[in-house]
Length: 434
Image (cartoon, rainbow, N blue to C red):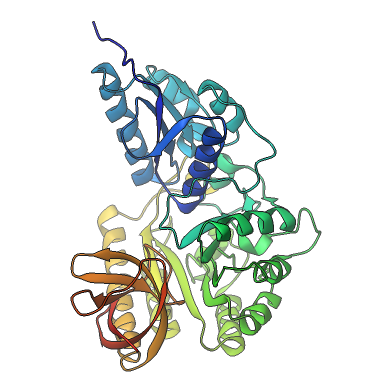
């Protein structure tokens, strides 16, 4: 017979999935701490909360495997309780309760008060921006809206996150001030769709006004934009980007495809001509801007001709940053009614071909940086190198700058002026400019 641990409850929060989940875990941990609970992130604890992802097959598989791993630990007496929250739990709660019934309780994405109650804590409405950040101390995610109103055929996010709901500017400023007071220097603005920000509460696209308020926050040096949508992009954002040095010349704008037939089936509300013109307008307005995009290959009905159109467009556009993924056939999405007719091996061949092209483009663009000087933030020390980023690079997904630690000492979280002395396809090597 297994015995319960007699130590005081320590709650271990495990985060799977995207930056939005990271943010949600940090809010949960902030609430727990405010209720006097001992809480850790991905360390040892006898009470476990798994914040799951339910976006695509690989992410769902990782979430289920993690739940099963902790159920095994519970059986063996290593942990006492396991709670599951997040997108997978929101999307598949009845199935999960049936298949993995030993989990103490499942909670959806909007059930934070209930989860806190189950953990013996109270939900404190007055906490604005009180989070326990899990990212390196110099940057933090700032979620400016929840949910999504877009009808994209392949995407399950509205099923898990609901309708778009913007957070008021004044609350976001308070949150940014608290982050800055804790040493955060870079804000990474996230939402399912930044482009839509403000439409629900201000009756206009209001991302530019939000940026104008955030740049006034003392201590913040960089503000980065993630996950914009191409349709209805508010071009006044580029005016702020150009005018305000704190707003990084960087935009993450997932475009998904370029074939008109595929874009129409994806319900993206745009065309090849409109998308290409938008990118040309971006480049004309902020020539030094780095554009990151993501693409999907193997969508139902994608012909070789559709793929070649996409491939040639990638060559022509020369994106500074690009990720490519295979289509995932998700139930209850509009595209689920279509036949998933592109074989997996063909999907992978197409991904590899796009990424090979991007690798060459990235190498060529990086060669142009040799001999130039950049403001670089130092994220961490790894092996013999200090690892940093320029304003043109986001954590975890983009290029990094490596500086030899045997010849230089740099402080994590600080900025340094670095001259690029060597460049590979996805990494730069630099030295400090004295």
